[in-house]
Image (cartoon, rainbow, N blue to C red; front, side, top):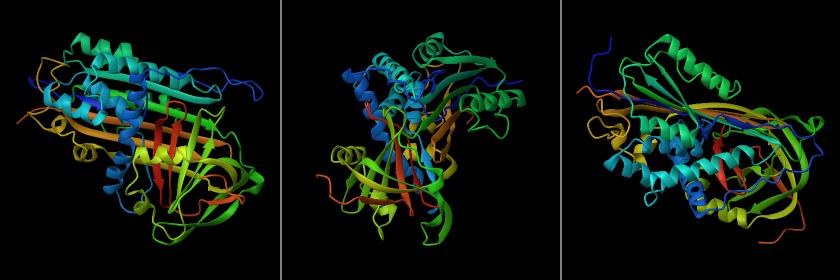
Length: 418
């Protein structure tokens, strides 16, 4: 029996957006794209840009706590969604630090929630030939009295389903893992290895699933085994896919970029490929979202000879230190964290904040998913070139998966070892 008067919240969110809706690839190959209009309000655009502003700092901070050769995949959009759910219940300096991180300091929570709701609805229906599923849920412990207003805000704007049950049980662990498995279509089968602690009082879970077929598919007959030079110079044998097509591409001083469309062209993967002899981490040191989108603006259509490895990558990490390094501190400190907008029962603080991601790339396209979880425990004490661009991804590279009209980044990462 849990008897403490002070409580904590478990926040679980998968990498992504917030609703149990999906846009499945149901159109035939010859059907014209459905006209889906991107939200154009300045507030919705600002929300998308604030999510993107998290992208490169997040990737940098997460990579800093990994071994040099580890492959990393993060979802800045998923993080932004979870931070929004947290901000709905935060007060004082805790709220200020979250909104500073989100770049929404001058926006009311009502406007912020409305804009995110609009953006989410657009993303799940933007491309009829690309499947995007977004799910959100809030798991409330039997002994925590949560304010109705908080539950209703997450339900209204983030489509969060509500579960009330004893969180510190094997049944709840299995229920949460099943929820993650279902809402990532089997890509992430579990987020918990053991039952939640007796102090856990609330879980907020967000899941994102993405599946896009290449607009220009690779011919499987051209796939062959080739060398991939890893971060340390060692070589691995990989299945390398090949094609020569016209793509948007940028050729820079130290890196080249190419854009590979999915479906009807609303979503794409941008690949950042350092030149031979250049280190990926060094090339990305000064990268920001503004640098990235400036390179996109300077991209031009040209013939590109592409070599891309088949990949299947799983990644999971704690986000606590990266978030602290980015200025969000109070939420993790007992006694300083202020989530009084969630409950009057006692003080909450974030005890764990983790993200699990998955990506598979083959000749047909890309499948990706993310689950991010935060647990809060109770307080106890230029122009096109005439020649083709050789774009051989046989060495470490970075990638971004985004929706092109809103420029919302869903996933990004570094591939340093295959």
